[in-house]
Image (cartoon, rainbow, N blue to C red; front, side, top):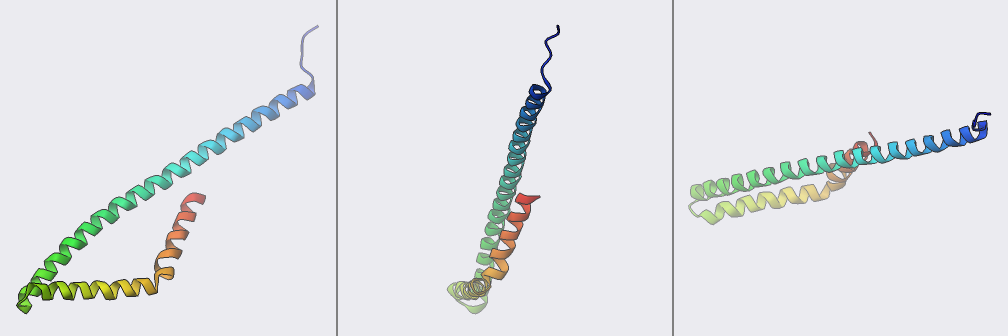
Length: 113
């Protein structure tokens, strides 16, 4: 007689292969999500760094220009520093609405898509 497996053994074998396939699929999805999330973070870090350098150089230029107009170079730096102080206070006051919620929503959306 032929050595055929019983229907129960065949079913168990199929379930095992299905579970292994699902585990592999979940692993691949996790790798895909984490790699896209890390690439997003890296690209955001590069943009933030370049923006920071641009803003710093622009601030120095504006400070020197204002200082030249006012007669003392440090006056321009005080004005620019005051502008950043006011901007920082406004951002601090509205940080939940402007920073935390949008960043959290973006991260959740990126991880769940």
